[in-house]
Length: 319
Image 1: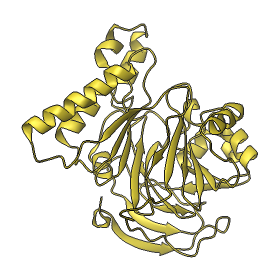
Image 2: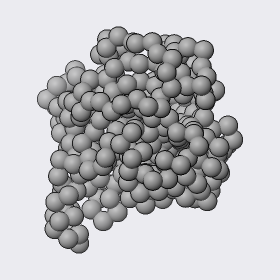
Image 3: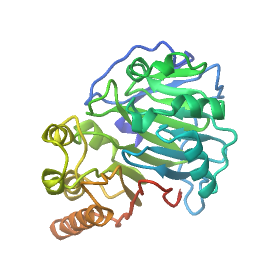
């Protein structure tokens, strides 16, 4: 997505802490550069695609699904964890498996308070001596976040910067206190991590445009969920507009709204009981085939489709 889709940047030297909540699931993003006295930066990073050579940007999904969500994002200068759903031991184990160095972590960014995204936040923040970035609603719902020594609060729809990574948290419909997804921009690379959302709002679709990589929830196959072992009230919750995104919803997006920019499409947060990597991948591939049949010139390239494993790292995405 080009910069023109955002409102003009507003300069600020305030800490993220103490910012009031604002915006809803369809509120547009506001560009707001904030420097914290805990993580000083000289200025907002400049973004420009380095065509023809590697940018040094790398994303590794260490875990995805109800058993625990965590991703490791790095540039040549900055390392971040996104979410904290894996134990300290499991996080270190998977980082070692993926060949990632745990030292020098600039922060842990949290999407919402549910256990599979935040259960081990305190332990990881202590282990890595890293500040935590979260929304006020998430902080209110996480008792341990109130006593962590280094907590920075962001506002959904307002940009913040950690090192040379610019984050845009944006509101998503989910049954949590103030859930967000993240659009990340650094070194000319743009990617979105959007998991745990009941449906694709206009705002979400806007944020998915113009990205090099989309990490998008494909939680369940609707028919498998309906026939599966869950109690009916859980099925209703998962299928609700505050639940989780289905294969069918992702397919509809790819067929009708996907702009074709992304080189990578990662299907994430798959249910163990109500989905499979093969079914999720097939649904996405068939949707793109229907798109090409209906609008032959609408896709510049086919995205490389990957499926995030539940209990092992996904091979690193390099840009």
